[in-house]
Amino acid sequence: MLDILQKKFLLSKEGSKNMLKGIIYCALLNIAFMMPMGVVFNFIRESLNIYMYHTQTNYTTILYVVMAIITFFAIYFANNLQYDSVYTTTYTETANKRISLSNHIRKLPLSFFDKRDLADLTATIMGDMEAIEHAYSHAVPEFYGTIISVTLIAISIAVMNLKMAVCLILPFPISIFMIHLAKNKKMQSEKKHYNEKLKVTEFVQETLENILPIKAYQRKEKTMSEFKKLLDSEEKEHLRAEIYNPLLLAPLKTLMRIGVPLAILVGFGEYTNGNLELASYICLIIACVVIYAPMDGCLSFIIEFMYIDTPAKRMDEIFNMKLMSGNDKQIDNFDITLENVSFGYNDTEVIKNVSFTAKQGQTTALVGASGSGKSTLAKLMLRFWDINSGTIKLGGSDIRQIEPENLLKHYSMVFQDVVLFNNTIMENIRIGRKNATDEEVIQVAKISMVDEFVQELPQKYDTKIGENGVLLSGGERQRISIARAILKNAPIIFLDESTSSVDADNETKLQEALSNLVKNKTVIVIAHRLRTVENADKIIVLRDGKLIEEGTSKQLIDKKGEFYKLWKLQKNN
Image (cartoon, rainbow, N blue to C red; front, side):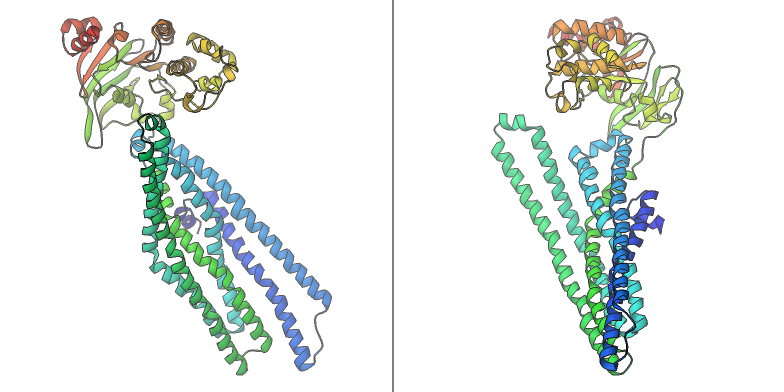
């Protein structure tokens, strides 16, 4: 049972145990709600016996009070157990599930993110999990708990009178079967609605990210018109999906109610034939009415299972994606060697049979025209993707055999696209080394010239810089990125035009800071301005994903090949 729950509802082992407890407690609560029927049954039977047969009562008022108190506490404790096991543990489970999903996504190759945009992932982590959370807390335990409790109650009624029990329960499985027949149509409709809703989310995010060009190019009206069309389309699909609920539930709930008059008629026949005493007959009629409340809920829960089918499949798809794995290996040498490396996105090959070695203690520059494969090659060395063929080795070990987290601790990166968090400058730099002291952070901030603009801020290093550093200039953001790299002090450095957003006066100072950073380390530079790599130990020239030249700046200029053409073109400009 635990394995079934774990697989069907994507639960952890602990979550499946708590869910099973929740199901049992839901069943107990439903049974506890029927306990007052026992008190009512005894009262009616005693009253009828006194009235019709003039017998003496066997139950005192005190006894009825005691029975009522016992019933109250039984319901109270069953409700507490049910609440704790269903709601409290459910929210813990879904919180852990969100963390687990985030950790899983973190270990996926970047090719995964090429197929999913931010809105899509946000919808999965937040929206999909919210829908599943609601199902965990309201639908799953209640549904299975109702099945168990209704079955036990039906058995109890059958003990009193089998025919009435059959009449009462028979519409219930028929209703469930009819919902099952309509399942595919309902799920198709829900999937269409989900896709339309996702389009709206993506459009909102895209609009917010591009609000400046939208205003600058006067596309406000067109954007709002497109947004309205998306909303209209989402609304139509939503209505189509929701219309199935009343169309299914209304007639099925009516069908189930047929069991009440049918049970009453059959019970009356049993009573007139002397097979059922009057007190039992009256109590069974009351039970017939009461038992349908959990049954009605059961049908709604089945609809909710259909509603969460698409989110559950999307989450399951992510969890089943192959992670980038490896072992924790001790790396003593930090040469990076590429041997016949090829790589492509989908069917397009962008890196073609590239081989070279970036030696420790040297600077290796990747140059070439835009689209030549420089950034892609650097990201392959960082193992953001796994290559299609060939080998990339770090210190003689294939990086595909090294656990990604263990691999990345050897790297520092200063890319053009700086990612900052809506936190203080101090904490944004401290990302380089989480246990660094304030003094160490300030020291690297001074080296990277962050301290210059920080001293002009009202809260100095405790100033919050907004989402992705929106309150800072491009140069200031890049300096923070350099400060991070200096703080991390990793043996391998990746630089992607790390001073491109800095003015000429400060560039020389930053170059000095970088020269201190790269001493005795393996340095990979992605160069767009060739003058920045004139002193590189090795220059790798790429064109259309192929290595066409390598050597020092002087060697390549003397050779008058591809590098010479690029160098001359930039020199003339």
